[in-house]
Length: 466
Image (tube, rainbow, N blue to C red):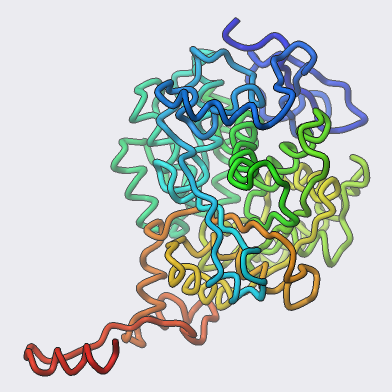
């Protein structure tokens, strides 16, 4: 069968018993309105006895399925038959150990690792989930796919539509809330781009309504198949560490799809006996979009075995509406006030003994500069993970001996405006782009050296500064 008969969709609420097949298109439970998971009857699937099984897949990289950094682990994401999988070679990403960034964070040598998802075809981690969502959409015969986006999701959706010609992409963006680096991808790939007056949360509300009314396949991370693909980030981390579980996974928090997917990945690996322990999880918000931090660390919202008191969240959202407070951060990829995967993230935090922190735009941009000086260019939102790890190290939550993996979610060229403004000698440009966000200084700026068009002066400058 194209879709495995041992895979199913199920409500995440422990008080709801809704279950349906994978051939149905749903983004929420029709009984209680909660989020959905993809579940498996693992006894009927071909689960390997050890994660080392996947090492042999490297010798089969001539097969599209095994070349993909997602579908190389097909046995752990088995909802669709191999012949139905949609892949463009995504997931060729690196886990890089770095002492230069580790020193900045406060780690001992050999203990900090960066998982660089900016190497994906569209330049961000979103390709992990989009490949899985597209595979499901293909299986059910979808002809149009839609998303709301701050940029990376739209770029990924548009790329898969352009590369496969299987569907037409429809993208909803907010007004002034998307970087040109990301918008250029969606436009160049030929997506129908709809810009509405409002922010991401407004776009997310509208795209759900439109998708429901017009029967369009919604591929935001509220789609449970998206998170199945995003589980593979953790599989690649383990693969790079020779199947040893790290002590910490640190990830930026926006719509909370990654943190939710990582929790699901380790819950399944642990239940299958493929790992003997799980890492701790740290989710890092931008201070200008810190809903999870506010709810989890300040107001005490917890998963509580599935019985989370969501009135805490509803009350907070009402406060945001009454005050007219919109998310506001240079890290556009995580500029989200109403994360759709909040409940799944709470579940992941409980299972992985997690913590939540917030970091300022200043801290993110300084961390971004140190990451780049170590050889990895990332967008501002990605640097939240390193800035957060540094904060947790300063607080003594992370030990200098811990093995820490920070997720870099997107490529440097996703938002070049912020990078150039940080390093510029033009104070007006700095103030225009960054000063308005509360950034006061470029602590690690690498500014261009202005010299006359004269050989002698150029030589002097090189000798002085190099």
